[in-house]
Image (cartoon, rainbow, N blue to C red; front, side, top):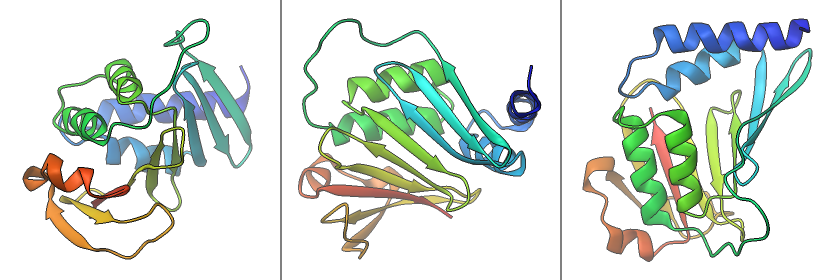
Length: 175
């Protein structure tokens, strides 16, 4: 086993040991950042995860979510928000979250540990970005994935499906 793999696995074990059941992702993200992981790129159909670290890169591959050739409709914001909420409330495991994200038509996600963001992408670059921290969370809605200006801020428990349908991009900020 290489030192890079050992460092990643040690960080993952430590994170799983200290993270709370509810709202645990920010703890995992911080421990992996401290273990020199810069980015984590997930490709959901193949269930492949690439960790980019200071000293090298590591790829892991789980059981693919699809076999053969399948259609991928545009991203389902409501489904992704439901998957994120289930994960944040401790009602989901990593395989369950990955599967629920795929059902919401997410094809990949990108965790940037230095910028403290996690971006979820559908086929047309539209999706959700959440900023990672240990404090309360809120959802920031903006009109475009390229436009970072905020139109409206809602508490996560107040977000409505009607509001989500009116926007192209949703940023989940945790601060």
